[in-house]
Length: 62
Image (cartoon, rainbow, N blue to C red):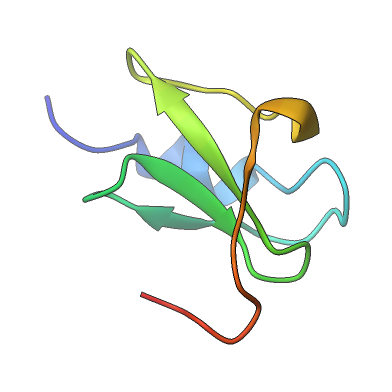
């Protein structure tokens, strides 16, 4: 199965801002535009730890 479960994606929020996350399937990340962070998905499991997130430019959206 590819992708993230839509039911799960609807319920996940950024742990920093509590805003919805955007799923970037190509990068296998959950992106928080509000926080400027991209959370990795490892082995199909979202890792919503701010220390493990990658910083993204606020102006760039894929």
